[in-house]
Image 1 (cartoon, helix red, strand yellow):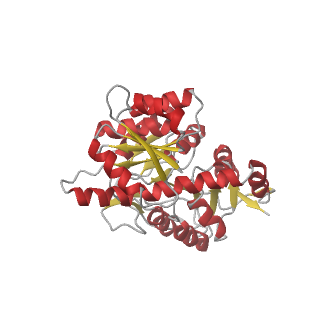
Image 2 (cartoon, rainbow, N blue to C red):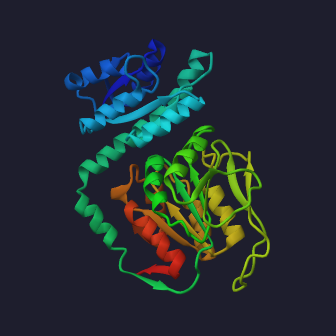
Image 3 (tube, rainbow, N blue to C red):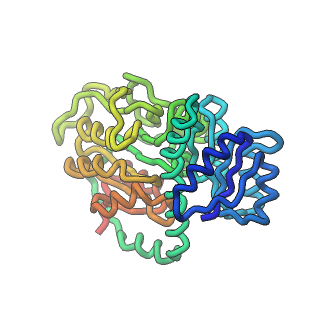
Length: 365
């Protein structure tokens, strides 16, 4: 994997280069001090991946992404972003323009600690990018789609209609959510709760961006906020999101006490905060089998333990298929654990949700 390091800071170019040298399958083929120089070097260096600073003179990271899109370039991009409101806004825009993922620039005064922080954040995402490219190059789309068709046909039964939708997503999530959520109808009769792995500030920006394009109201969730049908709640970065309320026995109709969101500072689970497992477990405790869980593109296996609990309660689980994932990590873990009732492409998830919520439960033979 050939990598070009793009940053206007000499120090951060060194940090990124030193970190990447630890990966045996990665070669740093060059550096560039701004986006204009980076584009000039693309022709001669032929990188597979750019680590791209967002804020640079002459041509910033967003300008580079737009030019790459115009050129129909296949080069991947991992953004380096500042932990600021402006950085968050530019990062979510960059993800929408096709960046694979992003990492925050460390802000510590100690160079050794900053390098360690950058290494811990950057290297797993570079490895995920390498693996995603390897997977896409080694499998044909037709083979992947054929494996997904094996989950069909599906039939609809008239029971266990979900009363809440919970979604877990990570790498590739902002773009996937921007594809899925605008397709949900304005009269969706249930609330939607989302954990997207992101730091503070970034989830608020993501929610605002999605809200502009959706027929449903999208917001960053607040502590003790009432859960209302037809609303989409995104877990705040750096916090855990759960639910509180009174569960009711199977067969009892109606919810006597309104459900509310709890935002806590509980510990990370498997390194994740917010955690998909945390949300899914809470939904199982409150809604029992009346939950529809959706696990989408992302690194790791966050969500698998939560899906196992949901399945024990009798809930339904949908997983995004491999062909439409940026990283087939989280869905793969759910599928390989035998927890997915339905595996479908990103473009079909909204339709699947509509059938499950509006017509009962889809069962795949």
